Length: 152
Image (cartoon, rainbow, N blue to C red; front, side):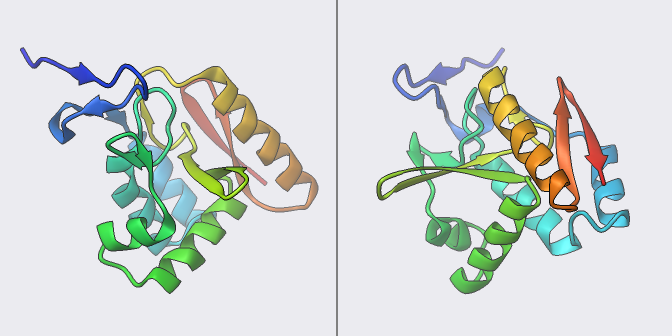
């Protein structure tokens, strides 16, 4: 039986081997088939999934939010390309961004990956973004509890 250590201030599960990230595998084929995500965007999201923070779904390492440059280094990718993919994934509602002054935090849509029981406010945020994008005629993801719907 594994012992989990959790940082009491950040909720971050300490130690890479103790992460619990669920991946609905059937969704990936549909997203690529429907051209919601490109194959490289899928690879980027899957690479970033190892940085999904427990309960918040923020992309973080040791409780500190990842910058785009750190994401690029972690995936051994050019920072310019990573910026392009992050921007695209934000538009497609696969990632969310919270910004306060000069502080930015990226969050993975819990419909794609989630670690532990994710705060319901995060799901509400992503669904509101999805509704906004739908009004603009863009494809996006909607979260229904633990399931995902790709909406036109």
